[in-house]
Structure formats: C-alpha cells, structure tokens
Length: 83
Image (cartoon, rainbow, N blue to C red; front, side, top):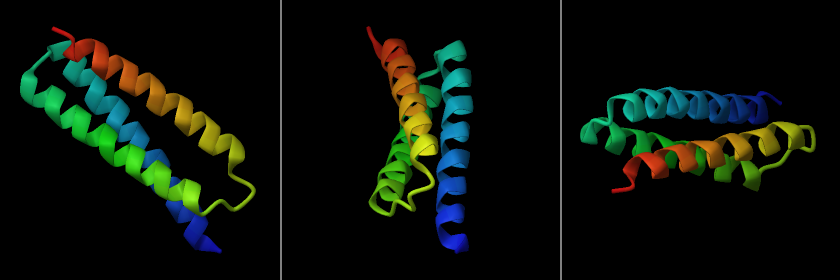
C-alpha cells in the first residue's frame, strides 16, 4: 500500500526540485546550471513516466497536474536555451 504513495511522493519531490533548479538556472543563465536543470527535468519526466505505468486509480488528478508542471518547466528551460 505504501509503494504507490512513495512513488507519487518521489515524482512530486523530483518535479519540485526541477522547478527550483530551473528557476535558478534561468535567472542566472549560467550554462552549467542550465545543463543541470535540463538533467533534473529529465529525471522528473522519467519518474513521472514510471508512475504512469503503475496507476492506482486515485492519482489521476495528481498525475495531470504533474504533467502540466513538467510541460511548463520544459517550456521555461527551452526558452532559456534559445540562442
């Protein structure tokens, strides 16, 4: 019973971490931080994809919100990386 909760909590924490890293990176525009932000987002996306493979039936709203947040993060980092 605790496994799906832990998986969703991990997705949530990973997305929050990526959001913070992306925010700092896009403010500083440091190439190293932007690269780290892109990696953090990739990790969050992978954890999200893993969670989609094991739905519990009670996490639909959470996963939809997670998807929207990931899309916003992608847009933000992609805008920052434009030449």
